Image (cartoon, rainbow, N blue to C red; front, side):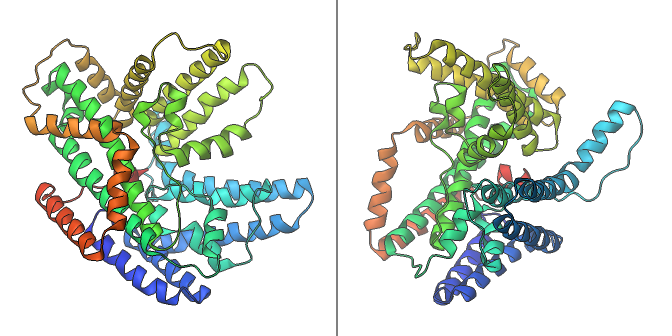
Length: 464
């Protein structure tokens, strides 16, 4: 059930009208949300109905024991069990096939195909679930005594496929807040976010993908170096509008149910260095990697280890995205970039940079786009072909249509536009009457139907 599909919105409407009349009775309201969460998982595969409740129940029990056990050794054993559980789920149901294939390539031995692969949403579920037990272990949160609240928060359906990765303890606090209600302004903001997300996804990201990006990455040899380079830039924008569009829909869906999720993007291609990029791109993942992985690695007082830990963190973050060496290379490149940037900043100190901001932003974007080649390509060989074609010094643009140039320019303007340009129409929409909002949403639906008549493509991050 894609978040850009009509089926999803019928589902969301049904959950909305079932939930709010029952929300005054906390157990009844939570039961509606929990049923919706598991129904959402079941639409992808019934196996999730066994995996997610069992794993969530174990983490809930571990959380209760972490709240009772005082000895450091006992607490460490408990949190280690939770880490092993969640990482074990990732290893078995997402990476086992990759590990077996890599082992076969190293040893030259034939290995059987791993059939138990259920990667959809597993990465986001496991990272989100770990926030609960690790926060309790670190005493940043307290365990909940409500089994229903925990099950509902850890499997909350808007965050299932691609985040934002939300701290379970924060969701539980919101779910257990007495006298929860949805005011008209929040409801309007939610609808605006959902509409904005659909525009990003269907009118920009899908158009760029279908009209150039997919063809360039599938058959780079058929295009000039200039066309392939434009395709790489288009992919950078496609990925941003696809993923930020998903985040807008997810945040808007949660807001309709009275829950606030963290923002996930802040004009990432405006970053003046690679560290700044990761403070703007996939913010919930960046924060997770920093808070739960980087800060847990040893050697903070060593002169070299903090830089090496950045590389390790991003390499593992790359592997988290998918079971492929392409993602590992992508992560290593970003880790090395962050380490070099951090080292340079430490040497420069408070001195003002000698290059203008626009130049540093330009260089950062070129590096990020180069890394995206390995993120998008189906194999290392394909990525190398894309790079070779860009360096071929052929600059024809016959296969780049006028419509694509227009959407490309619109995407650039949409990314770099001042935030006030978005806030003004949002505030106008919020203040508008119900009928005016309905007309706007109807016109949006017609526009999407006209431009994206072929149907919605899957969100890129659903496969991670």
